[in-house]
Image (tube, rainbow, N blue to C red):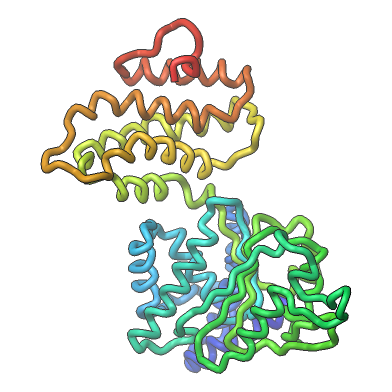
Length: 393
């Protein structure tokens, strides 16, 4: 299946550019199919193998035309940041859709999986409206469900225990609607939830070349050309090799995305009344947030496991509680008195976000670390020496 996917990708490239050198064409096909699924530290190893196999050959510059510019535009419209990593993942998702009718977007919460899917869907629809030509440049209709929130019968359908009549499940209903639609719109059926061997194995006939959903009623629903099956999952720990080999992969790492795009997006929603103080908050993020998260990961034990993006979002949510009154009817002049409250508010939010998930011993360590940070940055007013910072926050 992996070889077939590479051949399909190479065939698409050959049709789009018949004069391209075939070695370069195969090089690009191998990279397009495999790079999206690798971890960041695996990519240099893969590139090293490729460079040994294709000596002296370089990947040509790719002209995706209006796709990149529209993705950037839609990213900004959705209040997100068009950082290079995110744009690369959007392009990888698009290229995976081109060669696979089933794919998985894998990564921890906060890695940008949903944002990637939504931005690409909006971008493809915008390209259709502009009259641009390209594969899958159509309006996207998304059918989204959480397969783990319902029973197998509710998902695929079942016979009624009393009447013995067949009743379609959520998936079979959505699948039937999408397959029978004659419009050129792209139909994405998105499984937003953990993959479980209990239900995913029944999808094998959909994900392989048969492209058929087989129901217990004996009915087989043929997948249409415009349909794509997407699985938005955190990991594939319980997925079988049979399922994984049938799907394309796009892996998104929260650590590679980083915290800076989250902070920048949050500052863009800042109340107009407090805009003069936005730079002060940005400095506090630079001084406290990144070093605090690094300290917590290195020296503290968490009672509840978290990821860095989650801690950053928690910090900003607490800050929003203090900023919410300033989103109301705003006077003409900025509130200059708010300046003296900025540092205490930020430290309070930091303590109960980054420092909130550790144990008692970790709280003592975080207290010592934070006091040292506040002292070195001349924070005023200082926290009293007695007790922990948690006692005053």
